Image 1 (cartoon, protein in one colour):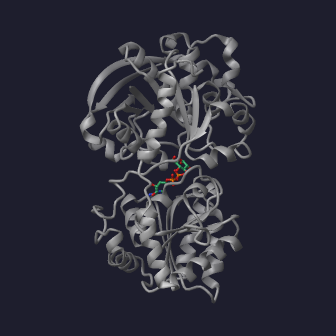
Image 2 (cartoon, helix red, strand yellow):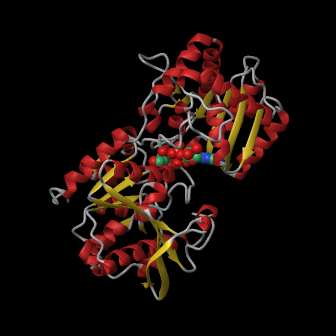
Image 3 (cartoon, rainbow, N blue to C red):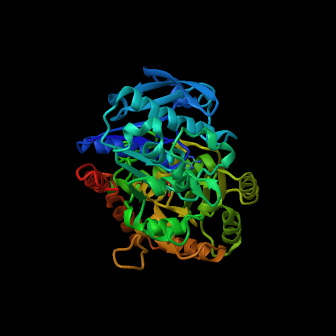
Length: 477
Ligand code: ADP
Ligand code: GLC
């Protein structure tokens, strides 16, 4: 079975968040399970991509509105990452360092989608299924189904995975002419509340829709940034499949970025070495429990509340913790962390920016991971932290709800709070500090979380089952 994943991110070539981790691992595990999976993504000028050797496999030009763009398809063979990656180089659009954040993002991703389908048609590629990820690739099912230029592809089943419904990629009808020609009676499929909405179009047009946890699928019926009604309407073709993690990249036994490798059997000494070097580096107190936060500083992650949460805990007489933050995003929040780092030197510090290597050292050196997310479709941080023996302290939503059991419950191992407020998160932090004091229980728990299997194996089986249901019957629509 030949599958092509369409994504704006793919680790290690271009990563902004968990989407990259998923698209950088899932195809590899699918290949190992007998599916021939590849990825097509834009050819950004990231530092990693600049160093790679690629082979030009196709060159052409594509018309978008009144403009014509030269494009080429560059290939990285299977041997490098375990699956083939096709990079779409579009002159003037993809040759930039950032993945997102430009005023013409709508045009960049639309042109990438049009050029990718153009390449498939021109090269007569035989695909059994197209798997798209998030809104940047959301117009693919519509274009495959209804654009005259791509009519040869309308029999190919399409699967949409929603990694985050908060972001939908809407643009106005003044850009309508950029779309390739299609039968106007289908124009309504593009529309959601008076805009062209790529995520809504994908929900309507994809043969199946998945999201990255069963709980997030349920939650989207109530909170999906305006798509609630649509998802309720399309419920029959929707399901939730929890993400796995790359078992090799995120492995404390082989992780070259750590001062000392460890397994669940050697977790005490292994984490001690990591914690010591982290505390030395950031001027923290190694005897106190170390709480870490790693993530985008945005409302969805509860990051706006973090400065107040930290302030309240750090000023409390009950507090016996250290805190270390790694993240970037909202500049006001970044500035508040800088102020806290001055005010609470020795027990609070932060690193503003994106730093993959530091994240590994933090997952290994931390005692607890904070994830006070308001929206968390799956969440990978809690899975990485458990693999490294760091106990998650999380809000009970989405993928966090599905992967963490509170320590007070049967077979529990983590700490959960049930709202995102200064008081609720503060109390959860104090519960974690009490657990840290109970040395035996704490150690037992560390070993326990390291043994939980969050590899891709189980989820890959579910995806393959879904693919087969579409490719074997071909009447999935
Ligand atoms: P999301 O995709 O919503 O940001 P996930 O939990 O799925 O959340 O994935 C986040 C990924 O990005 C993880 O691999 C995490 O370690 C990484 N990450 C987030 N912020 C940073 C940062 N500032 N530096 C390094 N890695 C980061
Ligand atoms: C999104 C979600 C996150 C999920 C990731 C990978 O970025 O916000 O919860 O883990 O996608 O699916």
